[in-house]
Image 1 (cartoon, rainbow, N blue to C red):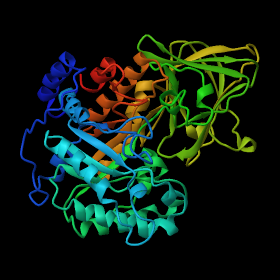
Image 2: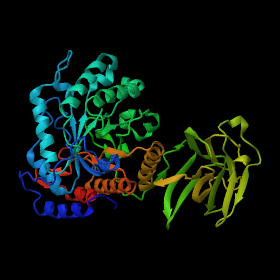
Image 3: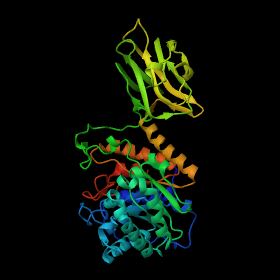
Image 4: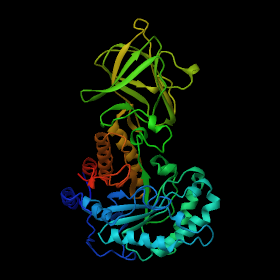
Length: 483
């Protein structure tokens, strides 16, 4: 696993494993914090977030302690000993600010956050001050815009002399009514912050609850000290199974995650009729096993976002049969003469010009055209689209899906010249621990290989890497994060 401070992380892990239950409160100053005015390059500062843990459910609760956990000094020491490089501190600033102008933040609460800043930076840990859970802003943006900006003005002014290890995050998971206004609001907030912190590293993210799929809609100002964040809880039905706050999740079936299980690539939806389709590994190859119930039954792939740059369907037949191919979404325009007798062991290329020739591919159907085998069973190996856009496999493994999402984010970051931070990812404790550990390791490893820092959600609650009841690390999760 490529990562910064690997030797430090390995050494720290040995220390943590030998004394994970300790409630040590000794402050260990490892370096003199760099003033915000004496800055390293942004890439160096972003690298400080390589291995981050979220201190969730603490200061973003309506009142600290409401959600069963409060900040403790030992948490900072344990984080250092565990091998993490940074802490993301979610803060519900709006719960501690006046309702009317100038929206004064409670000085007692400021002192509490000051203490957290000192606890982190004195141990050489970076700290993200994240504006979290401003629900009123999501629901009624115009009525809360001035308060949002007024709070940020105070926070930025208060920490203008803090070390460069302190990062600001403009807003966690913008969504709801705020979405169409977010590009404007985040620019206004950034302008307020820059009034007192002209070069501090600031973290911003897209709408859709910081969805990686929304990165393309994020419009950033010309500011060279921005880090872009996104969150990753895919697949949601795995990571949030049993979650009491997600509607219906307590009734979802139990799901495991092993990394190798194959499924339809997330680009496609399965609209098949009278056909059972199963993806599985055949040796080291991906194969699609098709069982047609009758003649003209169809394996039907639909794309909500039509694809361009692909002109050929390719596969190797692992059986024999007569197949018909369609790549037009208009049944009245389905071409004739698009059938193919396939033989086991042969490689085939089906040009889209023979099955509808769309400029944008939104439909792909493989039908049983045999009148002699109405209940045809056939397998297609390495089924894929090819063209100027490259290669797109129709099936993907669970690990492929992880890599695909991160590739998308990485490509966006390279195009925009912005460092990326996967600010949240985690699997809830209702999933089995072995699956949680495998998924966590896959996500953190794939992110690190792409130079993307990460923030595990979270330290010691429902997703926790640390078990407060046992005063010990959840060893499988810690190993998955800090191998």
